[in-house]
Image (tube, rainbow over all chains, first blue to last red):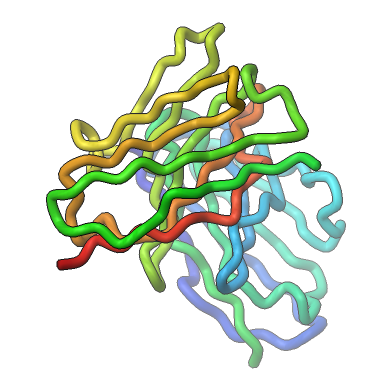
Length: 107
Length: 121
């Protein structure tokens, strides 16, 4: 199975900050990397698919990059509604494994 | 409205069985692979398994922790997918989500709200 790691596991940031989360796959997954946002008590929400494509309706401050094994999610200017947990997921091959998550909270 | 709605979550004893349903509306369900993902309280997301469409012979796949105990099926005439869970363990306690997979790059663009399964004596 492909293992996904994320760093950091948590971070504290202020509104307006630039935030970067990294995700690494244990083997190459081309661009089959997706990012989801989850708020407490809610289902995950798709933000980025195919490593860098913005899902319809998602604000442009979210940006994904990378290919192969190393990927990044960047939030250019953190907004109050962005405080949440972020998960990367590979969809290259089943099992479609998720990273352990990065919790972004208020500094 | 395009949506997935899970149901069937309950409290069940270890060793017991439960069947979850995932009802779809607002899109062509028959053409969509459906996955199940679970999340234990305070933990991350775990892929449970998936069922493909009729065009792909309804092929199924499962995560290692549930293989041999869980079975995914679907009834396209009812726009519903199912997760049959047998030999339940306390570690199966989680919120179970169903989700739709897209046809390219295979990401999950639509999620249900989830249903809670509690395995406890």
